[in-house]
Length: 441
Image 1: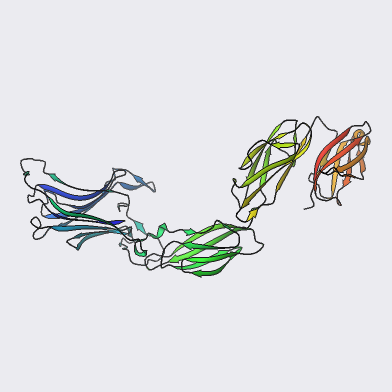
Image 2 (image 1 turned 30 degrees about the vertical axis):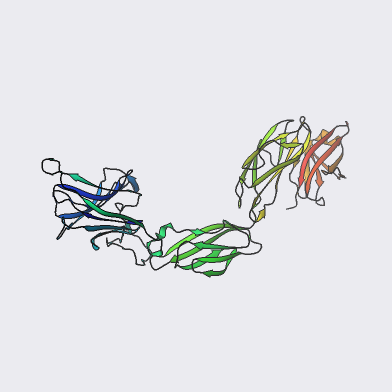
């Protein structure tokens, strides 16, 4: 906000209409710093116009509202024969008009529920207050001019308005004229170890709080040094309860993430639970549906085995393409200022045709159940696990038949966690392959 002042000598004929004013050319706002109407020629008039109003609980711009506040002040001796100053002092809280340095009218922006004005310079308790929507807040053009009476025979063309100066000044920012609602709590969005958080403004009394997962090391006025607790990962809320001589109590909050991101959650199309079966050269879309503690852009997608990433390396989703045979794995991780998240793996199996058997569960913990019809199970010669490095481990099997169907129970209790290929050799010489992940979580 700012101040505006004119020193001028008014026309000596009462049928002229001298004025000095500010106007916003959009949703109409206008401050007439002074006007002297030819039908009220011995008085100085200040006016505030606005077309803002309240409709269905929302502030709207509608010229039909035409909010108008007006005050007239006697011109006094020498009104049209001497130079006079008219001044506007405009702050976010109130607007004041002066004539020759004497306050003639003031208007507040905020009021108590009872309707009492709340001028700047007082510390008000927290609670409900009223705001006058006719109070001007928009940027404006400054102008001065002279109008005449509608009857040209009445207003002689020999009169004039003499201007000594027009002055405009911008108020030096200080606590008294800072709008408390414009303050924010600033600091890093991700807290890894120790960081400084601050509430904008000077001469503030601030009470700081934080938790869980963090502690205040030190605080001084509007800023605090906050430290992340070791071995904690998750959300933390930082609060600053601020007040000053001129601004009422207000609580500011900021929710930050502490530590590395969590393991992302991924969905694929086509769907696999957890192994995705693809035909040779088929494509698959992978979408990251959860990425707590990191933004979707802070991610890395990759693949190995018989699977190729053909989509973006970073972002919320990517595209993969299967090879002609074998198995593959895709993976993704996110990162933030504290480091990298755990890696989320996904496995694919490239099928050349229908198989004889199905696996359950997958991932496996203590055992694998190999399901199929009884005759197919009887044709099994050997079952083994093959690591990505080609190391083969034979597995003991235990068959159990139930009518036309059956199953083979395979213990995986002593098998190290990881991704394996389950190789099933049949008497016919065929070998069936399945991708299996061992996890002892």
